[in-house]
Length: 215
Image (cartoon, rainbow, N blue to C red; front, top):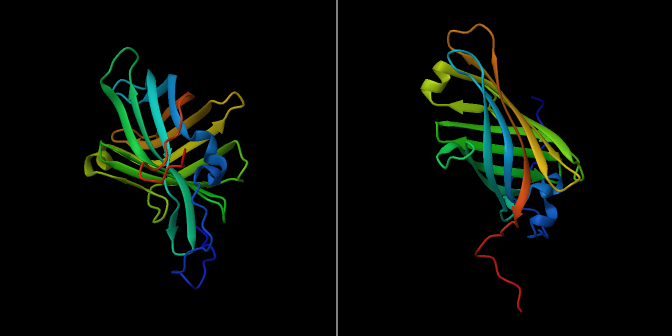
């Protein structure tokens, strides 16, 4: 990865910071809120070959206060997606993390953690008004990579995670993800794919400790 240009002063934070996260989310603005998707499709590995599973998803994305790393300024959404099989309440997939936007560079960062013992950080770039973008995390990268517990690394070694997001004109948004893994005993990589379209069922909720307007 090409080393970006960074300032000599790594401590001083930006002046005149705008605390309105929703106004500064760039291409992530269309994701803010509480969503439901009932048409999810998961293609996963099984001993007898790929298996397709339908799923229902509840995806909440709420604005966080602006984050600074010295001069770097990030706006973002904290998220939790909870997935079940149709007609069931037992968790099928649980995932938490952040979607982050850096206005100065056009960088988008997607972090994820799942309770099977795996984390990843994917990145991409987009313009502030973009309605589609793609992010990638790669095994072995020191900056945008993938880290797994020993068993997952042994049995389902994850080589790459890729997700494409599209903000649709009807107010919904869709994603299509591809997790490329090398499964023990197989000679070719397996593409574990997920896709869904989500419809808004609730509004985004800001920091609950933030001051409320009078009135």
